[in-house]
Structure formats: C-alpha cells, structure tokens
Length: 459
Image (cartoon, rainbow, N blue to C red; front, top):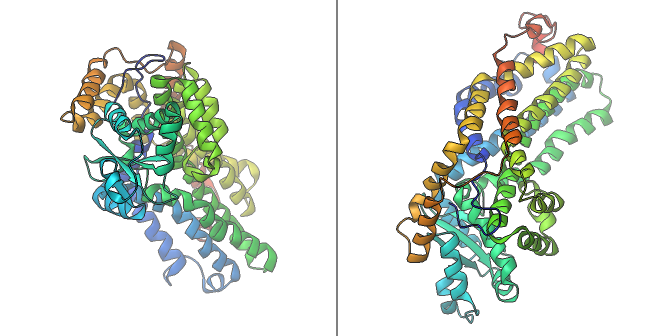
C-alpha cells in the first residue's frame, strides 16, 4: 500500500525480510527435522553416540539443558508459521485478551464516545483502507498496533490513551497510525503485531537463554567436575547455533524502521520524531524488547528518512545479518575446536569451511541476489498484493488505493546509483563465494571428520 507523500515522494517498501525468513524456514524444514532427530537420539536416548560414563556425568546434564536454548530459534520460526497459518484464531484471542471493541461501537460500551472519533475513522480509512479500527478497553492496552483477524481481515488496535492523544496532539497520533499502515502495506500483520506467537517467542528468548544457556555454563564452572571439561566444546557449539536468533530480530527491526520511513514519507520526519518521543515518554524504549529497535536507533533513522542511507541499510539488512551470523558461528566454532584439542590454524580453517557450507548456501544467496536485482520491479506488485483486499472498501479507502496504484510507476525506493550497486553487489559476491567448492577442512579435521576417533565426542 502506498499513499500520497507530502515529503520525499511516494516510497516503495524495502525487501520483505520477515516473509523471506518464513519462506526460508519452510525450505529448510525437512533438513531441520532430520538434524533435531539426531540431536534427540544422541542426547535423550540410549542409542546416542555418547558412552554411559559421559551420559552419567554432571557435564552431560548441563549439555542437555543448554540444548533447550538451541531449540529456541526453531521454535521462533515455527511460531512464525503458526501466526501465518492461523490468523482467525489469533484474531479471536487478541480481541478477548485486550478487550477490543470496534471504534464505531465505543459509545455503546458505557463510556462516552470521545470527540474526534469520526475524524480518526476517516483518516484510518484513507491511509489503511479496509482495516477496521479497534479500541482496547484494557488500561494497559497497546497505543497503536496491527494484527490479523483472518487472511483478508486487517485490524488496527488503539488504546483509550491513543484517543486522548488524537484529541490533544493529532499530528503525533497520525504519525503513529501511518506507522501501522506501513506494516499493513507489507503484509507484516500476518507474522508480527499484536498477539503474534512469533513476537512472543522472540521476546521470551533472553529469559530462555539465561535459564538454559548461560546457567549451565555457570553451573559447570562452579562444580569443578572432572568430566565437565569434556562438555565445554559442545556447550560452546550449542551457544553458537543459538545465535541464529539474531536473524529474526533483525527482520523485525527492519520492519519497524521501514514503517517509520513510510510514515515520514507521508507526514514528514518531524512528526515521526515527535511520535517516537511520545512512545519513549510512555515507556516505549524497553516495552518492545527484542522485537523493536532501540529508541535512539529509530530516531537516528527518522532524522535521515529523506536520504538514501536508511533505504540502503534496509535493503542490505538481509545479507548483512546473515554474514554477521556466519562470523559469529566461525568465532564460536573455532573456540570449541580449540577446546577440543585442535590447533588454532586448523580450527579456524574448519570453522570457515563449516560457515561456507551451512550459512553461505547457494539457494539462500541466490534468492537474496534475485530479490536485490528484481525488487524495484517486484515492490509495486508486492504493495498491490496487500492492497488487493481493500479495493472494495469505502470511498475514502478506494480513493487511496487507486491513488497508490496510479503512482506505482512513479514510486521510488530512495536508493541512489551507488547505493543500488552496493545492494546488488554484496549478495552477488557472497553467492560467488558460496559457489566455490568446499576446501575439505572439515573432512580433514581430527575432531569433526566422521571417521575420526573423536567424532562421537563432538557430534
């Protein structure tokens, strides 16, 4: 969905990293099931590769506990699939959880209808046609959030405090609504937003990591068990694999920054900055947890919304975060192999080979290159896909939808020639590296090779 922009022209959305993440998980689901089946067999059954003495050691108990934190990223992605597959159930739960009522029925709930409700309804219909506005009667309800009540049923939930903000400072309230309209225009309400199991799983990640990832390490160091040293390499590997949580976090942050940019294109960056200040004053700096960028980062991006730097960063976020994840895996795996007895040179070579095979995969980076090259052509069609359900809405909504369709050919993503070249070249170079043959360092590694005498201890 696109609206007429008063500042900087009509903007195309950045690549849908959230949707690409979900599609990637579907692609890798079969291999993930096989891998977890092997892990369960090795760690929780008598058919595993570890001997009875190792299984009975305190260090092995810590290893089992740390595996829960390793499972968390998979649960996050599974929750994303659940959010997309069951929007009706999510809409029913969200409506009950936050005591949501339609904006038009607010007067029938016993509370006096606030002034300006008609203006709010008309503005929401113009910027988010087809999306019903719901009001939370719960005191701690959301200031303004989107959610899905069905495949084609889009909702914007606002709180009573937001209605007061609409009367007091309508410019800030409009910026908040435009931010949510940006989410609706990219289809992100089906994955994230209010009542999403995906965002709930991401928010639970720090507590799970501290309880099952960090606590076993502290327990191993405190007990000083002789067998504990045997489990340290494996625990480090578990922690390295758990770092994949940074990928969905980065995708969520990009979605929020892109929605801020959409609002700035329509009402100006000053209004967005003031709206961010309103969120920060209400405790919004930490309320979002991992699912929202820090307040300073959002404000920094809002100040540069009219330039080409922010759209370039959003367009590069996917390949960059995967490269950062690969670097983290290399560092952790190198430490694990050194603890297992490898020399530093051999450990680094094996870690790089593992990252080359597991992270720089040809299908994934081919998709990234294709998305980077074709996105200027795909972006208008992507926006029309999510606006298709609103083509039969009211006159105000239909007018906005027709305006967006008419501006499709004139819309731009804000990228200059150099920024576009960087967006295309970075994933292209990574794809070229992925196409290189394996160095064979893993097969030659005395710890990782399948036929090696210590392979079972490192599985």
